[in-house]
Structure formats: C-alpha cells, structure tokens
Image 1 (cartoon, helix red, strand yellow):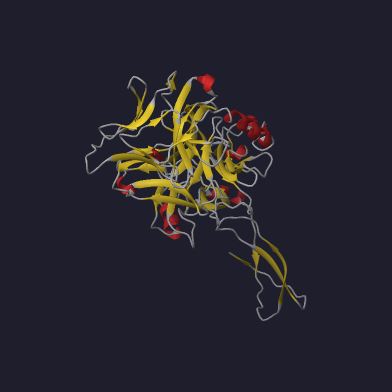
Image 2 (image 1 turned 120 degrees about the vertical axis):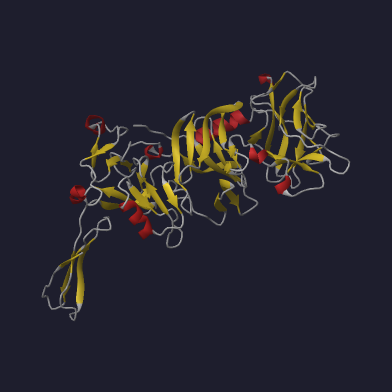
Length: 491
C-alpha cells in the first residue's frame, strides 16, 4: 500500500521551491529582436524576447553563479520567478566559460559553441543558407524556438523546432506523442533535481499500442497511467473536461498520434510539468497574486498508483480498504489482502465456460490498461458485445468513444489491470466484464414487480435500484390507490 501527501504542505513547498528557483541566475540584456542569424549570434549576457514579449531565450545558471554550469533555455518574460520551460543542452552544460554563444552555423544548423569554437549542443540538422534563402532561428510567442528560412513562415516547413524536443514542460500547442512518419516521439522528462536540468527518473509519454494512453514512468517502471482517450478526455482523469479557458485535443491518424491542449484566453499562462519527485502537475499563473496555482496533479491518491490493487482488482478511493475484487474473483493472497496490500490482485472462483458466460456492468470506471487491447472505431456497442461474446478469450469490452451516444469498440483478451472506480459524481466509463455463469449469483440483484391491471391509477411506493449488469432483474412494488396489490415478475 502506498500513500502520497500532495496537498497538506503545498503552500510551504511552493515557497521553498520559489526560493530555490530565485537562485537561478539569468542574463538581463535583452536584444531588440526575436531572431538569431548567421551574423548575429546570442552571447551569454544577452536574451531574445518574442514579438509580444511572452517568452525569453538566453543562458541561465541553476543554483546561481557558484554552480559553474550554464544552459540555453526558454522562460516566461513577464513572470518574475524564473520558470524555465525548455532547456537545449540539458545533457551538456557549459562550464567555466564566459564566451560561449548560440548561433546559426554556415550549414544552417543552430549550434552552441564554447570560446574555442567547440560544439557543445546542436539541433543536428543542416540546411544550406543562400543569398535568397537565409536560415534564421526565431523565438515565437508560443515559447517555440524555430529554425526556418527567413522568407518562409509556414510552420509545415520549419527546419527544426524546440516543440519537437520538450524537456520537463508541455506548453499550449506542444504535442505529446508520435510522428509516425519520422518516428519522432515527443515526451517530457523531469529534471534530475531542482538545480540540475539533466534528465531525471520520471517521464510522461504516450503509448500508442492498442487504444492510446499516457504513462508516467519511473525509469522503466510504470508509475501512473492516464487511462485511454475516450473522445472527451483520458478515462483515468474524469475531471478532464473542456472549459471556457482550456481545450484538450487528441489526434490519431496514420501519420500522427498525439495529445495537446490550448488556452483559449491568451492572457492566461498554463503548463503541464513533470517534477523531479515524480508528480505530474498542471499550473496556471494567477497574475493578481503573482503565484503559480496548482490546477491539477497526479498521482493524487492511493488509487492513482499503477496496479495498486493488482490484476482483476478494482481500486476505489471512496472505500476503506480501497481494494476489491471483480465479481467472480477472490484475493490471490488473502493474508496480504487482509493487511490492505492488494498488489497480488485477484483470481477467478470458477473457470469461464464461454458459451454460458455473462457480462457484469461496471459504471464510473477508469478503463483497464489498453496496450494489448483490440480497437475498432467503427463498431457499435451491440457489434462489440457479439465480437467479445463469441471470442472465448475476451475478458471485457466497452465503447472507445463516449461522445454523444457513444461509438467504437475496445476488447480486452488479457488480464484486466489498473482499474479504478469513481463515485457517480466524479464520472468514469461503463465497462462490461465477462463472468462465469456460476458466479452470476454474486451480482447485486434487483427485481421488477409488474401491475397486471394497467387500468388502475398507480402510486410508486418503492423502487430499489442497484448498480447491476445488463442482465439484472429489477424490483418495484406498485400499489394502486384502492390499496389492492397485484404483482408479477419479469426480466
């Protein structure tokens, strides 16, 4: 069992890290341009400022001048807490030098060189400048540093851009995911420490196997899973809904699979950050109080940790203990389960029979991991059920898209892992799980009682409805106003 305390000391943590960040040494000589050219490089004491003065590009020294390490970075221009959003040479800091420069080379590459002219970092792309086609590097108001031909502002023709190589921060318009044509995988990786921009242990990335979803990993281990995209948001983030301020977008085509977000009010700053301690956080800037407000974060509770309740276990943070087994399952390790360690998961009471199996309906769910799932976006739910029913290996199914009336099909043929159930108020999806008919009696039952004389005025005296599956029988007592009682059973 794991625990995390992300709220209690948030104010103290913010003040502490603000104090640390304030020790980052930044240059203060802003050039009257947003562009680097072959003849106008950027030196250590200079900065570029984007056209509308949103972002700065320059050199910074984490920990102050005593650290002796300098980096090329991008930060907010009008926010005074030195929030670094991108680092170029995070693996290769410049040490003990005051003469390094960022420049455009003769072969059209953006490169960081030391005083001896040795290359420390570059974009690793070459595009020959000509008299008619000069290569420049420009800092945009989105925070994107782009290398392009001076006379071509079409973003489709950029030679290189920093948005394709994020560090620990996702800005509006940045893509988290894959360019399938080039093989480029865009992800964000934490700093090693508050004063070391080198890649840390935590990476937030998009997995495109099965139905795409995002993972926060600790080195090679999955730490947190977002759940698959369902047309509205990630199924493991039910509070992820479009607002008047923020819009979320997911693109899936033969060429690209990625997640991005947009801020609809251009006066608002927002960023998604992987911190060095493994917390994924979205911050928005509150200009009236001059602080970064934590808008959202994960993991936020015990059930956000990957496989907290093991295979075929469901985590519910509103219950105590938080772990329970699927209907038809029992704890694999009862001793550990009784000690509130559900990591060993659950096993079936009875084997599936295929022909006689039924499906249990679970509501308000974070869907199981989908990396090995089958997906057909054109199927409807009835077709999806049939495909699952006649495939004896199918363990569960649901819609892939919940917008409108819902559409598409996701089928699992492996063990169900990392499930979570939310309250009705929180949201979540419906999941249909295959259960042996011999275990169907374990469902919570309800029944319908029908009035046989439909000509009588009716008073609904009592109705008992429990969250059940599609084969549930409902129970209702209806008493006519002349106090005579008729009843019958139906499906």
